[in-house]
Structure formats: C-alpha cells, structure tokens
Length: 203
Ligand code: GRF
Image 1 (tube, rainbow, N blue to C red):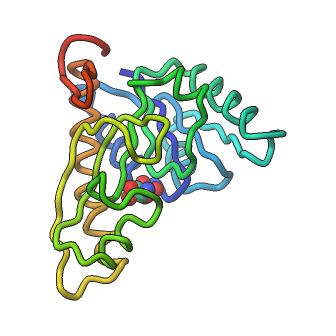
Image 2 (cartoon, rainbow, N blue to C red):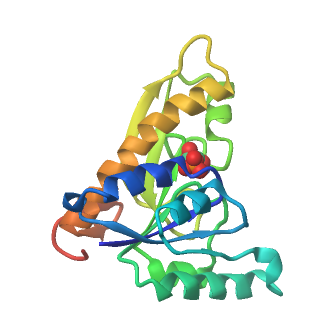
C-alpha cells in the first residue's frame, strides 16, 4: 500500500513508519511526506531516506480554501492508498476530506473522546485521570471525532508532569501506529458505522 504521511513536527511517528516500511513484509511504503511548514524534523527524516517531500503553508495561499485545494492536489498526485497524519497540526478542509474520506487516519495523544485538541496529555493530567493513551482514528470533519480504529492505554503515574506523560504516550502511540497501519495495508479495510473491519474492501 502507498502511504502519504503528513507532519508538522519532529516526526518520531514518521520515523517509526519509515523503519517498519524498510521490511518488505510490512506491506506499505511511504511514497511522500507533506508538511504545513518548512524545516520540520519529519521532512528531514524523509529526505534522508530519499522519500519525496512537499510543503503547503496556509499563508502562501489567498485563503484556507485555496490551501485545501493545493494540499489535496499534492497528496493526490502521489496516489496514496492511505494518508497518515502523524502530528499534522492542521485541520484539513472539505475538499481534502471528501477526496480521502475513509483513507485518512490521524493519531491523537489521548483516549478519545476525552481530551481532543492539541494538549491531550496536559488536559488529561489536569483532569486527574489515571489512565491516558493514544487513539488512531479515521478523520472526519470534526476535531478528533472520527471512527476509532485502535486505542492504547498507559498509566498516569503519581509524579508525572506533562513531559513525562507525553513521552510515555508517544512510545505506545508509535507502536500502535506501526502495527495498525501495517494491518490496514496488508488486509484492506471497510468502515461500517462507527466500526472498522479489516479484510474486504480497500487495500
Ligand atoms: C503525537 O504524539 C501526536 O499525537 C501529537 O503530536 C505528536 C507527534 O509527534 N499530535 P511526532 O512529530 O511524530 O514526533
């Protein structure tokens, strides 16, 4: 399966995917990496591996709609079977969602539907939950509201601060992302209501 990965930051999730994809039995290849800003660690990692990269900045376009169109075209040009948002901090527009609906997954560092948004671990700590984690889901038009593919839990420890909890979540999150993307790539999938079934359908 062909993966296009979208990043905004360091790219530790992307690094894990690139590593997994170096095994031919994994069933997927990263065919391009896109970012919403120049100079991301993610793009550097991709370039090191000879993976094509592109950048679409919102501010280089007259409006959000034009950005949506440009990003959709860039991603579509690489003919992905699956688009993976790995720390991509932009909400994609309607055109993008229409084009890649059911083929666009995002990993979020909280156990949805609790703690959506960009401060998942901090919000979880402040709330005082004792179990945190990460959620992999198919993106829809809402913020972190899509159909859930998988979740992984980690404990919140007594002495955790935002950094230590974020790190613990990231370790579990990466493993989950690699495992689930591989399963989708090798088996195909279909979405029925709020559930994802592996097997029949897309590959
Ligand atoms: C992930 O923990 C994701 O849930 C959050 O940002 C992180 C991405 O990190 N939104 P990286 O860029 O893959 O290292």
